[in-house]
Length: 107
Image 1 (cartoon, rainbow, N blue to C red):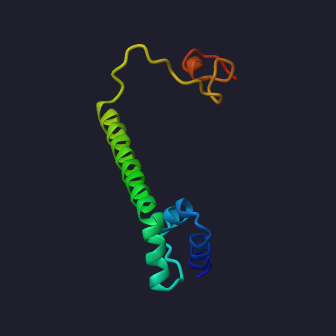
Image 2: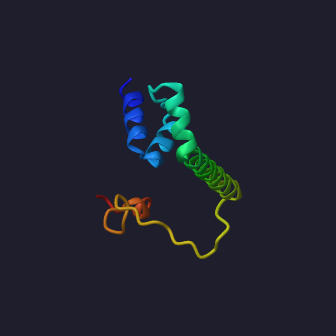
């Protein structure tokens, strides 16, 4: 896979932050020998991967919390008294003929 080759190339260049993202988010594994990968892990890739995992887990936790808040607010419904109705371009005062129903006004 080309992504695996690219990850190996970036690892050899020392761009550990990009490689860490590829390892954690995209599940890409470099096509390098085990000793070379171990050298890069000892050289600083391990700490960068750990930071990327922590960042990814905090992003996932925030996403779950946000979804929970949206679910709770949708269950509670509209409880605010001061909420204004959203403007509807298809139904405004010039084209809303529903208020004239039953008054004998023909269009």
